[in-house]
Length: 179
Image 1 (cartoon, rainbow, N blue to C red):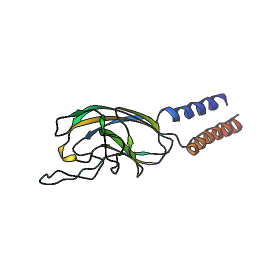
Image 2: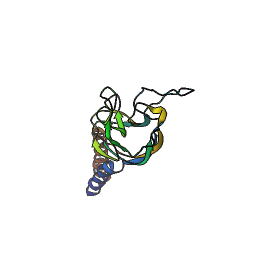
Image 3: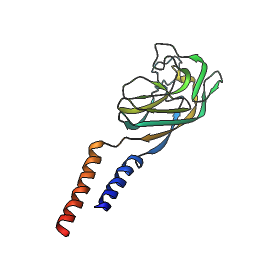
Image 4: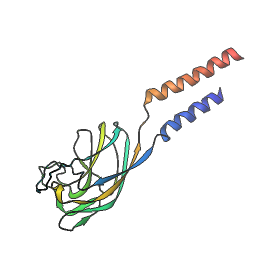
């Protein structure tokens, strides 16, 4: 019976630590702008949208992002993932109140949040993670920032309970019928 308990505890602990993984996403400042507004006349015109990472997060999951790289604009200004600290985007745009050219994210249909070069927080709403460049005029941007997304999902309690219950039941019946 002690062996079964040790196995159950090992499996429970491994559920908490074995699910973490990391993926690096390149976010192109020219293609992955968070605002659909466009002012430049480019022929042919094209559209820009935040990068859909395809990573689905549940409430309670831990999300960590470390970003590096440079992007800039037609004025030959260069910024890192923290953007331009001297210029905040207009209040009516999706990245309002945050620096222009900063790395931003959103989960599902919720509001954008500032990521910058380092971000670590627990997810409060479920949905897919989107990443983008905080700007409204994507026709004059250049460069790429790489976002290293670390994802640590919280194990589902019912799965852990069922696994534990099944192992204990096997141990109980084995002892009862094999002794």
